[in-house]
Image (cartoon, rainbow, N blue to C red):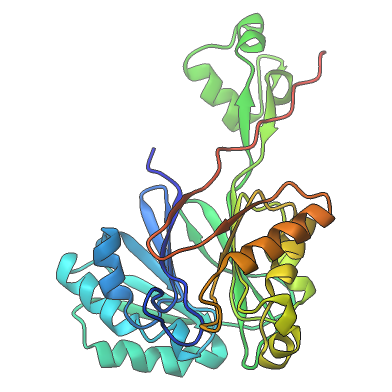
Length: 314
């Protein structure tokens, strides 16, 4: 099976630095890719990261600020060059629709682009299906209408080989049992347990808000912005951003397995301050979230599937 992993193309908030490119986060998921918030320079970062442009199925933008979408024209041209004829869908809040459509027009790329606006609502809005997983969006709290994204795979089943053998279910009959739910008096629940699906969450520019926790709840991997350190919490609130402490607390409350910190203000040449704050926040809540401080061109794997609970004895 193709890997599920995040490729970090850029980590700078608002303005790039000598060592940090503008935003850009590519999620590889079962042979396809979703690109989130491609800022200026994303096309070049893709070359450095050896990212295959033709595999990009969707580009998801959280809001219309240019550090989160100005890379769209370059990415579309790269797609046209590397994989002509492959269509792509560009998603973003309704408020960003005209801005995103203009970027697609400016690209003048020979690629079929569909721009789809997302209603900015306090409840989850289904955006698309990605390799069988459900991509949803929900409103956040920034200076302009903004959404976060959540990709959630449906639950599967883990079979108990011994129980199948005892029940005399083998070969094609296993698939038949899974489709029908019962076969020759044997119920699916008698020989298997539900296996949680994997979840990816993506939250960029926002103030601390309950939707942050909801978007990344039980996520195996979640990207959260942490533009500021806690000592600049007033700036974070005024400008519509999270602090590293707020990001760590949200991830711990949500039960995130691996938290990727990103979108850093240029005022912090040493990012370890932010990582330490997030880790301390997780520890204060007794959480088990692993905190990964993102650097440009990092590749972060989605953690292995959670183990299915043991099947109760009959």
